[in-house]
Image 1 (cartoon, rainbow, N blue to C red):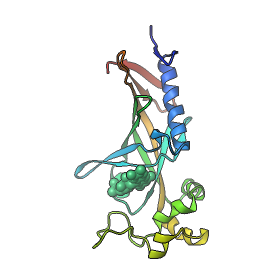
Image 2 (cartoon, rainbow, N blue to C red):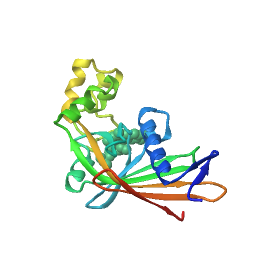
Image 3 (cartoon, helix red, strand yellow):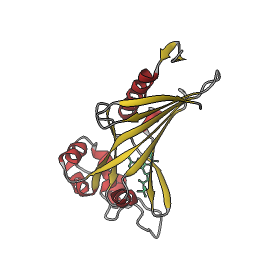
Length: 206
Ligand SMILES: Cc1cc2nc3c(=O)[nH]c(=O)nc-3n(C[C@H](O)[C@H](O)[C@H](O)COP(=O)(O)O)c2cc1C
Protein backbone atom coordinates (compact mmCIF):
# COMPACT_ATOMS: atom_id res chain seq x y z
CA UNK A 1 0.00 0.00 0.00
CA UNK A 2 1.53 3.27 -1.09
CA UNK A 3 -0.62 5.53 1.06
CA UNK A 4 -1.09 6.35 4.72
CA UNK A 5 -4.47 6.40 6.49
CA UNK A 6 -5.16 9.52 8.54
CA UNK A 7 -8.58 9.82 10.20
CA UNK A 8 -9.85 7.04 7.93
CA UNK A 9 -8.69 8.73 4.70
CA UNK A 10 -5.92 7.24 2.56
CA UNK A 11 -3.29 9.78 1.50
CA UNK A 12 -0.78 9.01 -1.24
CA UNK A 13 2.18 11.32 -1.86
CA UNK A 14 0.35 13.80 -4.14
CA UNK A 15 -2.53 13.97 -1.63
CA UNK A 16 -0.10 14.68 1.23
CA UNK A 17 1.61 17.40 -0.82
CA UNK A 18 -1.74 19.04 -1.53
CA UNK A 19 -2.87 18.69 2.08
CA UNK A 20 0.30 20.43 3.32
CA UNK A 21 -0.32 23.45 1.10
CA UNK A 22 -4.01 23.69 1.99
CA UNK A 23 -3.10 23.54 5.68
CA UNK A 24 -0.50 26.25 5.21
CA UNK A 25 -2.92 28.44 3.28
CA UNK A 26 -5.46 28.01 6.09
CA UNK A 27 -2.70 28.87 8.57
CA UNK A 28 -2.18 32.19 6.82
CA UNK A 29 -5.90 33.00 7.00
CA UNK A 30 -6.70 31.82 10.56
CA UNK A 31 -4.86 33.69 13.29
CA UNK A 32 -5.62 31.03 15.92
CA UNK A 33 -4.27 28.23 13.72
CA UNK A 34 -0.88 27.02 15.07
CA UNK A 35 0.46 27.19 11.52
CA UNK A 36 -0.10 30.98 11.62
CA UNK A 37 3.15 31.44 13.56
CA UNK A 38 5.92 29.44 11.91
CA UNK A 39 9.65 29.85 12.46
CA UNK A 40 11.80 31.24 9.66
CA UNK A 41 15.52 30.60 9.60
CA UNK A 42 18.37 32.08 7.61
CA UNK A 43 22.14 32.06 7.82
CA UNK A 44 24.17 35.10 8.88
CA UNK A 45 27.85 35.64 9.62
CA UNK A 46 27.43 34.10 13.10
CA UNK A 47 25.55 30.99 11.99
CA UNK A 48 21.86 30.15 11.89
CA UNK A 49 19.27 32.79 12.87
CA UNK A 50 15.70 31.76 13.76
CA UNK A 51 12.64 33.76 14.61
CA UNK A 52 8.86 33.36 14.90
CA UNK A 53 6.86 35.25 12.28
CA UNK A 54 3.25 35.69 11.21
CA UNK A 55 2.46 33.74 8.07
CA UNK A 56 0.91 36.46 5.90
CA UNK A 57 0.40 35.19 2.39
CA UNK A 58 0.50 31.82 0.65
CA UNK A 59 0.34 31.24 -3.10
CA UNK A 60 -0.23 27.54 -3.68
CA UNK A 61 0.11 27.79 -7.48
CA UNK A 62 3.47 29.55 -7.26
CA UNK A 63 4.66 27.65 -4.13
CA UNK A 64 5.32 30.93 -2.33
CA UNK A 65 5.00 31.80 1.36
CA UNK A 66 5.42 35.33 2.74
CA UNK A 67 5.93 37.28 5.93
CA UNK A 68 6.07 41.00 6.72
CA UNK A 69 9.02 42.70 8.32
CA UNK A 70 10.69 46.00 9.15
CA UNK A 71 13.52 46.78 6.73
CA UNK A 72 15.57 48.00 9.70
CA UNK A 73 15.50 44.51 11.30
CA UNK A 74 18.64 42.38 11.21
CA UNK A 75 17.17 39.80 8.87
CA UNK A 76 16.73 42.35 6.05
CA UNK A 77 20.46 42.87 5.49
CA UNK A 78 21.16 39.22 6.23
CA UNK A 79 18.73 38.08 3.54
CA UNK A 80 20.24 40.54 1.06
CA UNK A 81 23.55 38.76 1.59
CA UNK A 82 22.14 35.24 1.57
CA UNK A 83 18.55 34.67 0.52
CA UNK A 84 18.34 31.00 1.51
CA UNK A 85 15.55 30.44 4.06
CA UNK A 86 13.89 27.58 5.91
CA UNK A 87 10.41 27.52 7.38
CA UNK A 88 9.26 25.32 10.28
CA UNK A 89 5.59 24.67 11.05
CA UNK A 90 4.14 22.48 13.79
CA UNK A 91 0.49 21.65 14.38
CA UNK A 92 0.23 20.06 17.86
CA UNK A 93 -3.26 18.53 17.65
CA UNK A 94 -2.61 17.12 14.17
CA UNK A 95 0.86 15.99 15.36
CA UNK A 96 2.22 17.37 12.13
CA UNK A 97 5.53 19.03 11.32
CA UNK A 98 6.09 20.68 7.94
CA UNK A 99 9.51 21.95 6.95
CA UNK A 100 10.18 24.00 3.84
CA UNK A 101 13.19 25.63 2.30
CA UNK A 102 13.65 28.05 -0.55
CA UNK A 103 14.90 31.45 -1.61
CA UNK A 104 13.70 34.85 -0.44
CA UNK A 105 12.77 37.87 -2.55
CA UNK A 106 12.72 41.18 -0.69
CA UNK A 107 9.86 43.51 -1.60
CA UNK A 108 9.98 47.02 -0.18
CA UNK A 109 9.38 49.48 -2.94
CA UNK A 110 7.16 47.67 -5.42
CA UNK A 111 3.52 46.87 -6.12
CA UNK A 112 3.71 43.61 -4.18
CA UNK A 113 4.70 45.55 -1.03
CA UNK A 114 2.14 48.30 -1.75
CA UNK A 115 -0.60 45.70 -1.93
CA UNK A 116 0.57 44.00 1.27
CA UNK A 117 0.69 47.37 3.08
CA UNK A 118 -2.79 48.24 1.85
CA UNK A 119 -4.05 44.97 3.36
CA UNK A 120 -2.54 45.56 6.81
CA UNK A 121 -4.71 46.72 9.70
CA UNK A 122 -4.03 50.16 11.11
CA UNK A 123 -3.21 48.58 14.49
CA UNK A 124 -0.68 46.30 12.77
CA UNK A 125 1.07 49.29 11.16
CA UNK A 126 1.96 50.69 14.56
CA UNK A 127 5.13 48.60 14.89
CA UNK A 128 6.62 50.33 11.83
CA UNK A 129 6.27 53.80 13.39
CA UNK A 130 9.26 53.82 15.76
CA UNK A 131 12.06 56.29 15.01
CA UNK A 132 14.61 53.54 15.48
CA UNK A 133 14.41 50.03 14.13
CA UNK A 134 14.24 46.62 15.79
CA UNK A 135 17.44 45.57 17.61
CA UNK A 136 18.44 49.21 18.38
CA UNK A 137 19.94 49.41 21.88
CA UNK A 138 17.77 51.01 24.53
CA UNK A 139 18.76 52.29 27.98
CA UNK A 140 15.45 51.01 29.39
CA UNK A 141 12.72 48.52 28.39
CA UNK A 142 10.83 50.31 25.61
CA UNK A 143 8.63 49.58 22.61
CA UNK A 144 10.43 52.19 20.53
CA UNK A 145 7.12 53.95 19.85
CA UNK A 146 6.22 57.48 20.88
CA UNK A 147 4.16 57.57 24.14
CA UNK A 148 1.09 58.48 22.07
CA UNK A 149 1.33 55.30 19.96
CA UNK A 150 2.15 53.23 23.01
CA UNK A 151 -1.31 54.19 24.24
CA UNK A 152 -3.38 54.33 21.09
CA UNK A 153 -3.49 53.29 17.46
CA UNK A 154 -2.43 55.76 14.78
CA UNK A 155 -4.99 57.29 12.46
CA UNK A 156 -4.84 55.97 8.87
CA UNK A 157 -2.94 59.15 7.90
CA UNK A 158 -0.45 58.80 10.78
CA UNK A 159 0.08 55.12 9.96
CA UNK A 160 1.43 56.00 6.50
CA UNK A 161 4.70 57.11 8.12
CA UNK A 162 5.41 53.40 8.67
CA UNK A 163 5.27 52.49 4.98
CA UNK A 164 8.93 53.39 4.42
CA UNK A 165 9.95 50.78 7.02
CA UNK A 166 7.58 48.05 5.87
CA UNK A 167 8.42 45.14 3.61
CA UNK A 168 7.11 41.77 2.60
CA UNK A 169 9.48 38.87 2.10
CA UNK A 170 8.29 36.27 -0.32
CA UNK A 171 9.95 32.87 -0.38
CA UNK A 172 9.97 30.50 -3.32
CA UNK A 173 9.78 26.97 -1.95
CA UNK A 174 12.06 24.36 -3.53
CA UNK A 175 11.75 21.62 -0.93
CA UNK A 176 9.15 20.48 1.58
CA UNK A 177 9.06 17.72 4.16
CA UNK A 178 6.07 16.27 5.97
CA UNK A 179 6.31 14.39 9.28
CA UNK A 180 3.24 12.90 10.95
CA UNK A 181 3.56 11.54 14.46
CA UNK A 182 1.28 8.61 15.18
CA UNK A 183 1.12 5.93 17.88
CA UNK A 184 0.86 3.32 15.11
CA UNK A 185 4.21 4.45 13.73
CA UNK A 186 5.32 7.84 12.45
CA UNK A 187 5.32 8.61 8.72
CA UNK A 188 7.46 10.99 6.71
CA UNK A 189 7.63 12.22 3.11
CA UNK A 190 9.73 14.66 1.11
CA UNK A 191 8.89 16.82 -1.92
CA UNK A 192 11.33 18.47 -4.30
CA UNK A 193 10.00 21.19 -6.62
CA UNK A 194 11.29 21.91 -10.11
CA UNK A 195 11.19 25.27 -11.90
CA UNK A 196 8.09 24.28 -13.91
CA UNK A 197 6.08 23.82 -10.69
CA UNK A 198 6.19 20.02 -10.77
CA UNK A 199 7.57 17.96 -7.91
CA UNK A 200 9.17 14.64 -7.15
CA UNK A 201 8.14 12.91 -3.95
CA UNK A 202 9.47 10.13 -1.74
CA UNK A 203 8.56 8.41 1.48
CA UNK A 204 11.25 8.60 4.14
CA UNK A 205 11.66 6.60 7.31
CA UNK A 206 10.86 8.98 10.16
C1 LIG B 1 4.23 35.44 17.59
C2 LIG B 1 5.31 36.30 16.96
C3 LIG B 1 5.13 36.77 15.68
C4 LIG B 1 6.10 37.56 15.06
N1 LIG B 1 5.91 37.97 13.78
C5 LIG B 1 6.88 38.63 13.14
C6 LIG B 1 6.77 38.96 11.76
O1 LIG B 1 5.77 38.63 11.10
N2 LIG B 1 7.79 39.63 11.16
C7 LIG B 1 8.91 39.98 11.85
O2 LIG B 1 9.80 40.57 11.24
N3 LIG B 1 9.07 39.69 13.15
C8 LIG B 1 8.09 39.01 13.82
N4 LIG B 1 8.24 38.68 15.13
C9 LIG B 1 9.47 39.10 15.84
C10 LIG B 1 10.63 38.17 15.42
O3 LIG B 1 10.44 36.89 16.02
C11 LIG B 1 12.00 38.75 15.76
O4 LIG B 1 12.08 38.96 17.15
C12 LIG B 1 12.26 40.06 15.04
O5 LIG B 1 11.76 40.01 13.70
C13 LIG B 1 13.75 40.38 14.99
O6 LIG B 1 14.39 39.35 14.27
P1 LIG B 1 15.77 39.62 13.49
O7 LIG B 1 16.67 40.34 14.46
O8 LIG B 1 16.27 38.24 13.14
O9 LIG B 1 15.48 40.45 12.28
C14 LIG B 1 7.28 37.89 15.77
C15 LIG B 1 7.46 37.39 17.06
C16 LIG B 1 6.49 36.62 17.64
C17 LIG B 1 6.73 36.10 19.05
